[in-house]
Image 1 (cartoon, rainbow, N blue to C red):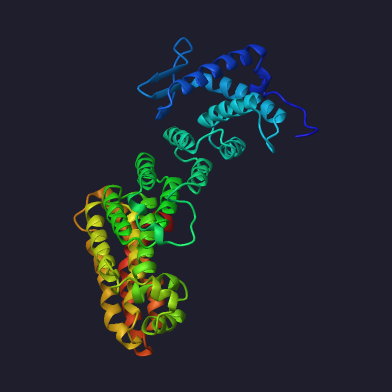
Image 2 (image 1 turned 30 degrees about the horizontal axis):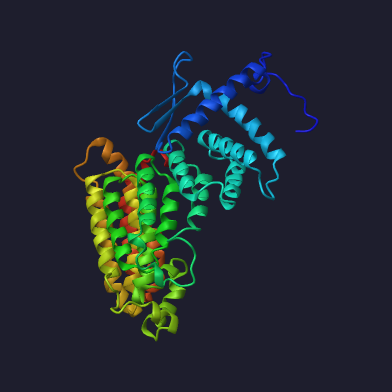
Length: 441
């Protein structure tokens, strides 16, 4: 900041910037040149790591396409490279044609900087310019990003830069029609992106950026039934092996909602009714029973649901969810996923039904959920029982508040007394759990 005098630490210890003498800059230059030479010598490097080594040990280790950098080298390399990058950037005219020497320097310095710190907007923007002028190939840039993700898997800027590149190549290049998207699932580039996301999601818990990237890739399948069916199977298997991953279940929500949007038939408007459901119910019913618009008719598969039966899909997922809650007790992600499934399921069952007939469906359904909560806490160990009761109680409270509020708007007046009685019974059963909860004492 202007006008602010540099201050030393409380005990007069100089800052890191002040300690970077000419000797340090010279050493940083030597280390930078070594690192640049190593990366140039092996274009197939597929893994990056930072190693805790003594200064007597080698600064870099490159074995079997795996690159290791000693921690003590990183400040020296980054400081020198950052200064060099700033000097080259200042002298080069990036708004026009960049000279050969400046291009080489910018390519090497930005590559070194993003390997250490991928959250550098300026470096990625400069590399975009180099790609646009043809100095850096998109294929090599994608390989660099894959290498960066092995050490920095949650760099949002790097994932965004990857999507910027993919938008310029097949099969992700924007097109005017979805007709050519039918075979995207078999495209090698599509499979590479899905495998990359799977690797990073599996090795880094709740990697929001990898899941967001996978969702972006998945949306390019358009209405490819084979691709969507395969993705549904994959995410079901993945969730069964990563029951604590909220991000994985959130991604599954998007897959299920896409099935409803593309192949839901009369249920296609259900995702749009997640709020103000009672007011939109009549509108959804009229849309479902009436004539489809010309655009909607074109989007409809030859059969009503094609390969998908929405009701059966959600019923299967609800049963799988019940089995996983009993098999893996105490995981909040399973209970939160159950809320989503139950919310969509009751809305699908409301389509094409008279309000009076909904009582016969929803009252037993709500009772079954409350009974499941009770049975899910039986025969558990002390530690599992504590967490399971806490999440079960939260789900039960959700049933008797949010769900009951929706149902009370649908039920005829004569059934309100039955609903209130059910809510009181559920609330009474929760009294012991919530009264002993440490957060409510």
